[in-house]
Length: 310
Image (tube, rainbow, N blue to C red; front, side):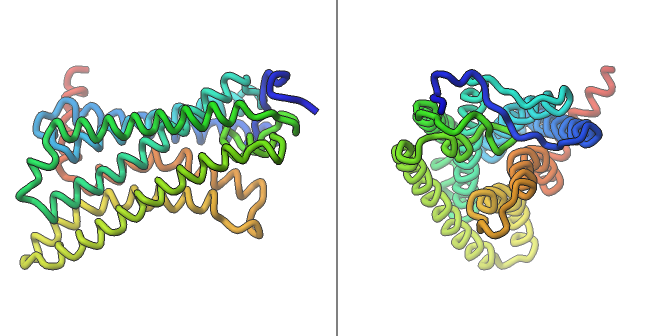
């Protein structure tokens, strides 16, 4: 039997058992992380440097790109290190920091996706009030609320999770530190408080999900009432990237935590965890860039200017 005070490190789940597969996973993670860094970095630079992109939609997109960068930099580097050096150790403080930042960026991303849904709703359903409802100060307040709520959520969960007494060793069944795996190491009667926090977070997340669904019902109703086909196409084109990113985020998260136990296995759980924690930050910039002509032109202009200078 052990407790949290005697544990100095945790053992993460290895992505592969054989050396060739470990090196293959290292190369795949390196490629995905470089794609995420490049894509999100280009979006941040294009929005920051392009004055014509200083609108609420692109302001929130910049914040979303920051969360994608943060989330992939939280989990992937340690997984790459472990695959390259054939180890599975992570320090106790490193595990706590990884859990905090992963929760912080994931909650911030969902909050920002909810705010971006509100932006689309006001833009399409209340266009005459757009400047009033989403002025620069309102946008700053909404973004600050998203980041602050994510910080408080991550702080409460991390502090509470790592205050639990651990009695089932230090081996985590995941390639990064997350709450369910740490709870499995604690006494069965000691994590009711953490379940209460999880239930509260679930209720808040469900409220955001209901808001998103109801908003898009009204958005689609308003779009279908637009008389011109060109106007309907333009309105839909502004919503499709957000819907695609939102669907990717929600579907992978739901499948990870709500999949039936009958289809659960260590290899399946590992593949799904990679799908929801690593793939979306790399795909989100591509989804937004493909559908948004303004952003595509700004990114292309930024790359052209950089190539001319070098």
